[in-house]
Length: 182
Image (tube, rainbow, N blue to C red; front, side):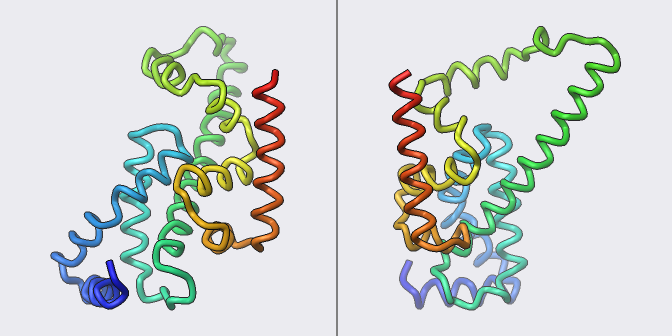
């Protein structure tokens, strides 16, 4: 989509044009979903996060100033939505662990079949190693290689310097190399 078409689409979305909003969703749904899936590792959760991110983007269009590319701005919104969902998941997991301890249930024996299938599908050594990385390294690797974004856009999305992105990539490569050798 060229810049004139994008400007027109965004302007029409801001004015509440339902056809423009539908076009916006169709144009960006796939990329936003892929980003969310790479962070959340759950297709259902990623779909919900993508919908939430797109709705947030529509609501926040007046704040888009064009300083960064539109896709970087949209990825930053998606990143924040996914981070919020991950925080909620961690809180739920801690609560669940506490309840298991209080009531004496053994969490290890309560693996849902659905979770087992997801674990098996994502069971390659490389993906396990990537998911084991700290969030900032995992996100940097995912944006660079899964989404094929340039260093400058990754820096904008993550709100860090390009040097920091390079350092995180180097650190992630080193950790992944070590994990793969083991």
